[in-house]
Length: 89
Image 1: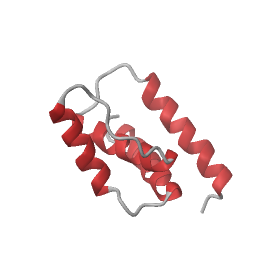
Image 2: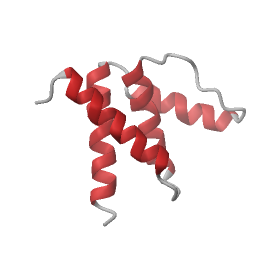
Image 3: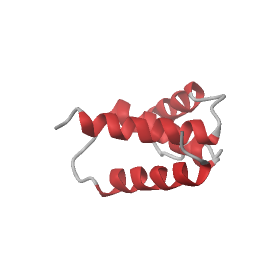
């Protein structure tokens, strides 16, 4: 089990991997990452897309992660990124 500091480091590394990846990701994967990231960072702002349908999907993704702690969301984000790249090889 990682301590808070170690989890923060691997979380930031996973975010960087996603931000530097150039190929498109599946929409459902991006929505999960979006929701985990928002929960992990304590960002409670509403989705800010100009497209109502995108906002609805983002809001739904956030709703599905309600009740997660920041550290739980960070771990799920890291797990999702690791799983995605593990099965793409």
